[in-house]
Image (cartoon, rainbow, N blue to C red):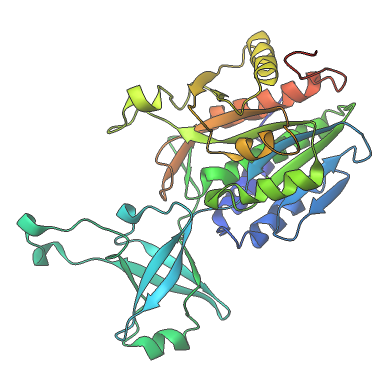
Length: 360
């Protein structure tokens, strides 16, 4: 069975290259819907932009497979009299990577190009060298004053993204900004494609859910789970590869790209559903890793699990290097393994099974 085809890789490239910042995910959602429409029977959308492709929309039992569509970004927060722009975060944007990066400022007049400026090394004193901080990084759009900046269409509240594009390193490493977590949207769309192409008849409704606003507190998942009211949820997101320098494995665990999907253990993760995923993965020899989370997963799993009186939920993560940078990196074989793991799990889900720990 071919997992990632040349046409699906083109979809991934187009989807990643498009900007989809938190609160402004719509253009990315349109790309995703256009691809998915060939493999589902209907769509649901909500007022904030979450999109759901549905297979068997009339079925009583509902299984969600979910990812989030938004990427981190910045907001214009303050424009100085001499035309420099200070910013605030939209999601978990990393101030330390900002200096010397190109940016796209999204305005009603279109995209305005700019750069995060930084003092030249010649002008900095080693004994008093400042590190990049949220209050000292700034954007230069080549304007001489505030009036020129405003004439370009830039105002407080304009959203700012990085323009970095998709590329492949060493044949199998996918690199781009916003792999967290539009690769998840790609994964669940590929699951839908495989179900369609292999003519799998599901005995339940499958809700392929691409949520908005995860990066600011799981908000899209919180909203859409109330609309769908699912019986089960399988969420996919990314997690840290911890084998690169300056990461403490005693705190973060040992996770490595190329070693397969990561199955999470956490209070929000339902033990029966998780063990079902592990059993099918072991049976089919799909490699996987394990990750323990203390109080919460920090993913949309938490939103689904604690909604609607409790929805049995599981989390399958993709190992990723350099999260929330413009060079996020994953391995092709891991992406394919996550797709296969979700696809094979869906095929064995029994809508008549009781996902309860005990009855009285």
